[in-house]
Length: 599
Ligand code: F6R
Image (cartoon, rainbow, N blue to C red; front, side, top):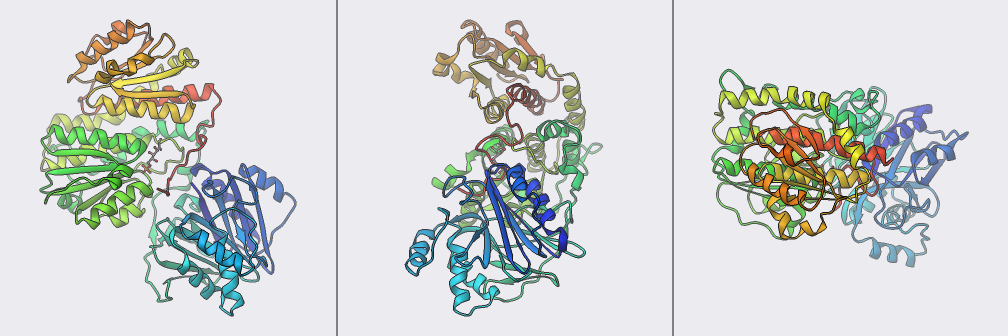
């Protein structure tokens, strides 16, 4: 998804600061990058393609100025060309604008501006903004007033920032698209997320919808669109800048897979009391969960698979629970009762589909809880309650450690819904889980399995009960980073259609853990084997599935509710190694974005 960086007060280091910010934003996925620096003159540089292309174009140039904005674009309106890359400027090159989101009324604004003589250089929705500002400046408005009045005319979702020729002030505003200020000692930053500027400061101010920030060398202010001052709290994020580096791993994805033991420990810390066998998520979350008898989980992608798992878990203890793909929930909202809770599971806390579903629930008067990784994210701020999964920054586009932490968080929620009481055995199984993940990481044969099946025509994944979401997640990971056909199915569904796809060159990964239904899955494995498909069993050894498998990915035995985390780690590693062998862009797979802020 598109990313924004801004900096004011960096003097000669402005250009380098913006380039560093753009590099920090690369993980979100993009197809073009650009920046504008304002000093006496306004200088703009932008290119389609990787950031390196822009850096090459800037070689030998010293864009000078004390204020600047930068952007990574993920195309929505218009192809990824130099002209469509941000920043966009007006006819007189006196203002440069970057924008995340979608301007819904851009066509009528563009028609109006074109009729008034403005000439457009791109196909983007964004370009209407600098031209609107230009016309307001021509009518005598100051830059700040022109910015506010232009933003006021825009409908849709946006995070917008603008910089003006001859000025070292950056203006920014948001509606339905995240924007955050970074407060440094001598400089102020702007980012569409915290990692954009985390290497410069960890003190942040989150902007809300309808607020306008003004960043100048004298400091920063936040006002409403109408200009009324707004008091903002400066918060310190507890992420370290080093957390966003690769620490010697070839890819962020591999690093994050290996960070899972730590992520799970952090998720559990001070929440489980082993001696008492109890779970405590703090008064606010405990209160939100009290008396809930119906849970609707809304989420997308990998987080949806965690939601599927959580629904199964809640149902197993007698709570009505269902997982919904967030975009479908909005299209067809589920009926709710007095004690319904809608839980949004979202790593980023910024996924537009999930936010829409949560807002829809709130409009209908249903209580909401966000389960998210990002402190201060939109989901965290808007929901009635928030449970942080504490995984640390996840940079690789493919979600890995956050899925595992979401599954663990679901277990904590389940325990609190059961009044905080859980068995000593279960609490010690939770405590042992990070160490067992470590064992899987150290002893895995996933790379050999990947080597053997790298040339397969397609990959299928099956599982039942808690293993079904793992099968779905295994397939999603495989398809998104290897670009190969992969599908996950409930094991029992295979014979109702998908079996027609199974051949000698379509390995079937059978996730067989725990006891419930495992024998039946072994039966499904035999059906596959009879059709000559290679079978990879991902198993805790409770059944004899190995007898029918060509390869086995073992996981240590644990409570059946937790085994899916271990099985999933094995599948993450297989996908990673297949993608690596195929030379794929593992951390930034084609067409994908880390934070999907459009519906
Ligand atoms: C897959 C992946 C995506 C996200 C989805 C939801 O690896 O990363 O499918 O899971 O876009 O994102 P969040 O969890 O941020 O709401």
